[in-house]
Image 1: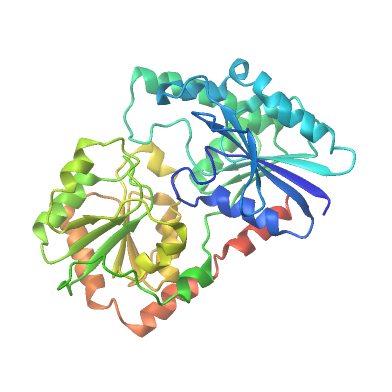
Image 2: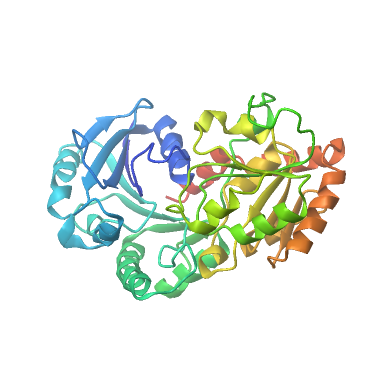
Length: 385
């Protein structure tokens, strides 16, 4: 128990009930025999009580309050003057431990860049899982360009300080290598899967699907965000009324009118946010996993968390505008499209519909997913830290 790991995260642990890569990383480090403590350091729009609390999983959460609660002020997370003083309590805490323990800093987003410069960390690691400088909705604006410049400067500082940089896609790795003008310390580690959780969990969520429905269920599980093509889903839903579109996850669109409009379709069902422990049960309601992403610079860099979760559950998957996933394309396992054409979407899903319960294909999907188990991913990463 020689290591303290400080993980810089985008928000509080249970912020939207979703489990991202950073959550799995934190739990892996927490359970590692050489770990003394994992600290989850994150911004919060509103401070509710103490700034540090012990979570039920043993992780110590420290929150840094934003300048003001409104989303527009989140740019302050990337500017030193707005959090330099607020970081002092955790630095004091760590200084008391630095003679006895190895203390490592893990960035999972480029917030609080000054943190990498004002403490003698044993290791600084940047685990880059998103194109943080690009708007998630793919639209450029004056505010988006302002945000891009601020985040880019913060990320550049972190990349220079990091002893090792991990990226979830080759697109992200190429960007980081360009920033550094070197590639020796930059590695690609794609997202993985808690294989046993999805492959060996036969329980289905009850009372979700319409009572007499026995058709094909196309499902998306995760945060409902503007990176998805709501127009495409609506068009397909209108053309294939015999299919049910099941959307599972919190609304991260800020009540986007296109998402609200999609929900008016009779064969589109949205559950809202669900407990992470229930996700495999919802997965078992689905026949075909869909990842209908729109075409944007942000999505060029994405490696979706759900790809190997769908496959581990034995489901075939259709992905769109996700170049990082192309290499996994395989008949009856994973289909990738570079278009948002509704008819092509329908043609692919009709083919997958015909073999959705084929045992050989189910076995192949699970076999592929098993090679991407999170523990092995993190073990390989830790060897490089």
